[in-house]
Length: 265
Image (cartoon, rainbow, N blue to C red):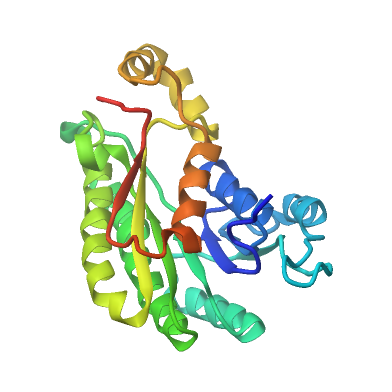
């Protein structure tokens, strides 16, 4: 079976659980060298080892020899700490001599109705969901340009496209990501760097389980408005990201790919 990301050096942020973990696993299965980044020290060590053992003995389609692709390397830092981001991205570039793909998945969410929005929470969402993404794209695009280009995939949200009551502040951060993606794509295209976004709908993750426990009836109503009649999975989102990061999407940039099961939330 063809491996879409064979030997590509990929960075995935927010990779310890949920969608980010699914993306990292999909990329490794597709033959990538995955640098899985998260905040919690040690949280990915065992999982990364298991993934590397499972996917790491890839064979080159050209030579048939075993390679060191399909492995997962855990890295721990705060994406909102610009100095830490630079230190780790530069370490990756020094080790691999290139960065082929960046998936900006790390994010935080506080679901509040407008009357209950708290400034401190909103500032944190913008700092991590928007400002950190801009800074990582700024740095990574410079490194990608040195080796002839690359692919950047930002994780947005269906809430930014369709709107969602109780998520006004959060959807504003993801709306910013959509706008940033479209403009960055135009700016970076001459350097051979593609920039796209994936906008997931409701995805069954650890976070979903917590939300369902607190307000299951409301979530059931939203699920009933999903055309395909089921929740999304991390694998659904990961497959979309793998396509956009791969050479099969070489003529696609500035696009927002909805992965929401034809939802009308």
